[in-house]
Image 1 (tube, rainbow, N blue to C red):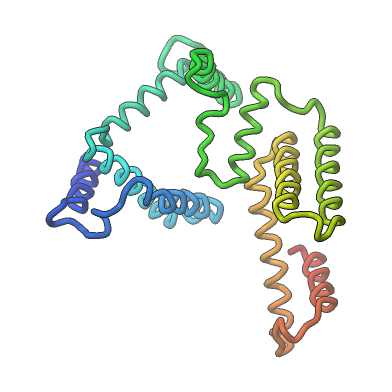
Image 2 (image 1 turned 120 degrees about the vertical axis):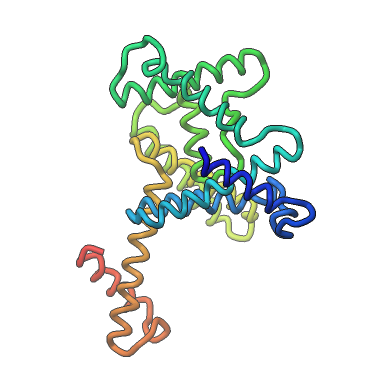
Length: 265
């Protein structure tokens, strides 16, 4: 724990009103939100790339965010990093009875189900007390696609879900038809109405990915990578011919796109 204690000490020095860093001193938990989210994504990116050296650095940056938030809370007399750690330890013990109690040890799948079960039990108790909604705890700061996925998963826990894949596909088709109708109305369709229909279509697509057991964020990341690889292929082919993107029309770029697909990009 010496390294963690040292880290807490350094953070306190950075926040010192007299001798600390001006930028660190003026931060609040609210102002740190974008940095915390960015660091979490950089951790995910390092994992996706299999870059272990980068992962070590990115985990450090994410840990810095945790220490930073805890220091701000400590200054307000709310809690400190030790309280965060104690709360996490208690939660881990509570949600792993098969390890820390006499319950039988399940396999990984059963363990994951048990973890979700413990969380659901705690959530149900709060809902029954009238102190929260079943959807509480799905953070507003999450990326919209991830939040949609989590909201849908949460609703599915209490049976508010589709029964079969064909029904989800029908829902996607219905939402797409409504987008077409909004576009067909032309100037009669307000931007707000069109935005709502496109949003419903995206939400339905997230539902489809979730229903077939896929994380829509990961699905879209793969699609992004594929698009990027194929577009870079177009750029390379044009550059090899001494040309740029501005020198090619859409038909030529489409043909090169098809070449990229054929070559496995």
